[in-house]
Amino acid sequence: MVCKKVFGMLTAAAVLFCSCTLGESSKKSGQLFAMDTYMTFTAWGENAQAGIDAASGRIVSLEKLLSVTDSGSEVFRADHSGGKAVDVSPETAWLASFAVGMNTITEGALDITLYPVLSEWGFTAEEYKVPDADRLSELLRNTGAQKISVSGNKLTVPEGMMIDFGAVAKGYAARLAAEDMKAAGVEAAVLDLGGNVQTVGRKPDGSDWKIGIRDPAGEGIIGTLSVGECAVVTSGGYERCFTSGGKTYHHILDPATGCPAESGLVSVTVIGEKGEYCDALSTALFVLGADKARELWKKLGDFEYAALTDKNELILSKGISESFTPDESHSSLKVTVAE
Amino acid sequence: MIRSQKFWICVCAAVFALSLIWCAAVLLAPHGDSVRISQDGRVLYTLDLSKEKDRRIEVEYQGRKNIIEIKDGRIRMLEADCPDHVCIHTGWLSSDIPIVCLPNRLVIEFAGSDLDAAVG
Image (cartoon, chains in turn cyan, yellow):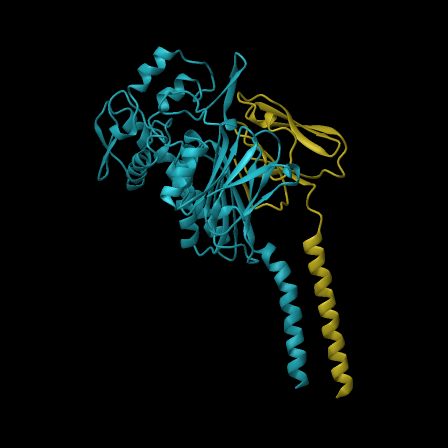
């Protein structure tokens, strides 16, 4: 009887002792510079290192397929094929047909064929200029994701057109890397691909992941989202922009005009199951603006979003309105809920 | 028998109390001011900003140079000879968003963080 009690107490003490140390000691992290960004991976448990290695390997190999500038990539070959069909890997073919599908779903707001327009603005080489209207309308004639065709593993980009996966590649890479982590036996991890976040499972202590949303205007965050296993992706014009003649031009172009989207939104965060879907939608909602974003959210019903307007108002979709906590520095932030 | 029981209860209580103290130490340890500077995944410096004197740190990467400034317990990228200067525009290191100089693969970040990640 006494023995039992003693044993029970000792066990309880041991569990308490271990629970505080285990969480941190089994934590591993890794960093990677890839896809033009800084990535960090954090994983817990005995398979953490194997998971991180698998995730890093996946991202490096995807970058080799999807880079728009690397002359050895599949995307580069398709872009410079003179309009011929090119054999590509299943990953590239899948992502191309996914992106064409998202162009339909978003009624053209997401378009992966804007690279020549982006170059004209100087966003690709960081030598910025404001193109004249004639040049833009000329370039826009050779855009439109619906002109891209994918058949099996054959990808065709018409002559004079170019695709780039800048709006979907990181989200896609994050999702596949997270799947590789799970396959390696990791049950808790967070992958941060330069602000393109994918979580695996729950935190080892059972609590939600805390994901900060960057303040477009300042140094910190506007607040945090508490989430379970999901993808969280933000698009914001402030990431890459330049000023000319007193006006600021950012890199998220409206496919209809070829000019930086002026929808009244400064940052859009999308929360959902799959990285590439959230990545594509964050760009599309940014282009669409608050009203159409809400309509699309209601229509699709399979994601949540947080949109910050240029009037410093944060719009939260109903499903995550309880998950957001404003940062102390933004306690006066006006928050509305989209229903 | 009674003595032995008391003895074991005392042992348990002691282990229990030690555990509590240990937990408190782990959970409440100050981690907000510890900053890590790394290049290409290699940690160059780990600094406690609350104890650092104002100073500048020069870091080279393939012939290019970054200058990091520590002032009044804060840290920022002061100069960088990269084309985009994103790292300089990030300003002082705050909350949980790292300062990253992509061309020179230099990262300044808090070593411990309340957040798991940040988007945007």
